[in-house]
Length: 92
Image (cartoon, rainbow, N blue to C red; front, side, top):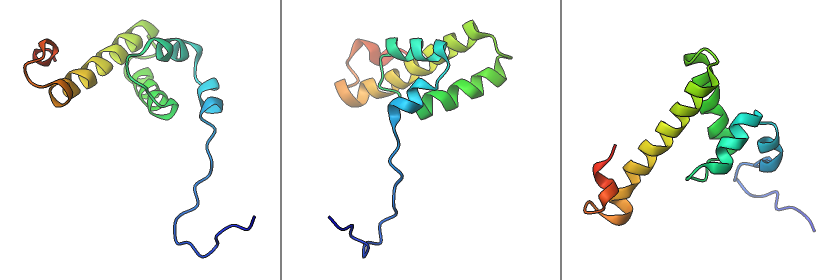
């Protein structure tokens, strides 16, 4: 089958998300397996690298900050999804 070369759409390189996930640090992969949100390997790794710089490589502090980030993201979405009357809407 021929490709449609007349399109103006940008060609996306087909990423292999599992390959990207497999290259993540083991500790981060374990955290992602338990995460409440469906993090992409790219965004999780980007945050991990930033926290690694900020926390001077302290893995426990990095994990706490990852958890805090996820809790803030969840708290931000609660009123939008379940309404301001939801018990979790007050957190954050």
